[in-house]
Image (cartoon, rainbow, N blue to C red; front, side):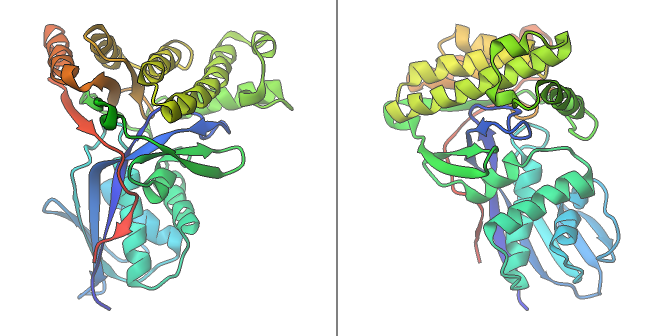
Length: 351
């Protein structure tokens, strides 16, 4: 047994936020920020996980906490109790809503599958990574992130339909038309284990039960209007966001970036007002970007912090980035990190 290195990307969800666990459609891209995992045999019978000079070590069957739990959780979900040495490097920002956890899980799964010749399919690896996060770590995620990290292709978004489990690539290369996708990392950290994410899942599930047998994504405004206020807002976001995903795919296919941008901004308004998962920093980032020339902008990820994305003409990208930083400075907040991303390849074995 030798060592194996695998790489997996972070992700940006272009639109369709919080629809994965509600049985709707999402449109993520893998981004060109990646996590690399090198796995090899252990020299001392311990499972050792190392990142940035910090290590966790224990028996393979022991429960690991914190960041090491995402790695140990994958081994647990794959049924692997072999002692291994696992080293991690990454340039996916942590806590930025770009799914650094799924990148770590998927890089681990691909490396260990190759190293131990497990022969698992991509779908089986995705399921193991989802179980690692939801059951081992305890973060109630919906599967979007792991699926994107394993199945995305360069130059494409991935249209995922969580009603039937299907997925298909959608061309995504706005840079060919001199339009860039900017990420604004607000540096407002969020922890999905402790944040309101679980509350939103509970509230939307309650709305779905009240609408049964009609699903949230298939309901109409009349039915939604009869729900209690909180459930009504959650259901209205799911219903309208599903429609925006479909319209966004049409806009991307037509390379209509103005339309795509407008749909992104409408999505953010819904996430802010109806699903209530935004925060002041995300709202300021979105408003500042649009005011200064972005075609549209929205928060991305689970919310309560993290990142916003903005679709921006290339010749205005520098001005938009400066304007967003200036707006944060006026509020006395830490400067955000702004960078462009392109649709990248999903997880693969490097060596």
